[in-house]
Image (cartoon, rainbow, N blue to C red; front, side):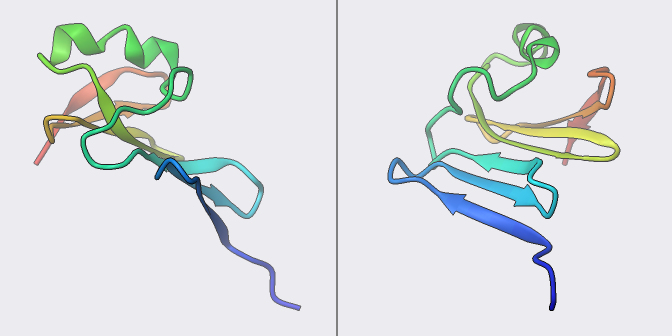
Length: 91
């Protein structure tokens, strides 16, 4: 029997959440132009956003063993490590 490596859940609102085989979310993506629901982005990251960008609305967040990547409503992408330290802007 082959185990699933990931699960994708698409809500009627258009929000999509990807989970790994252990049930941990790996990616949360709101519909284009919409922000993620409150509580998904770690508070330690959320508190840094006003200082890093003129747009604080997060459209997508991904995480892996190295940290987090966020895409903002304006298309800007940011990287954070696992301790929520800002690493820089992505191309």
